[in-house]
Image (cartoon, rainbow, N blue to C red):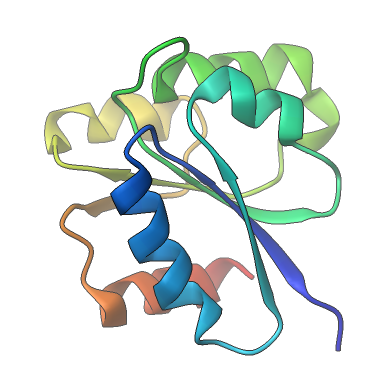
Length: 120
């Protein structure tokens, strides 16, 4: 079975590391990291299976990333994006820009895997 690539986009390296550790426990998962939306757009390829996206980041935030995904990478618009954020007031806005799901931080490992596996 080929690996599923998951792109974690978060400016907090501790959050990225935690999610990476949780996902790496599962077989056939490869994790790629980006520390802001612009970095993520540059690392985004057609073999990415899922994006885990923070909202509040410097350089390019999560909402701006979702907007740019539509215009700069339209061929990847169907790549599922799950937003991970401490602020659930941005949930509707993120969903309206194409996110498929929303997880409130701190991340619960069981909840994270349930949502991730749903879209892989």
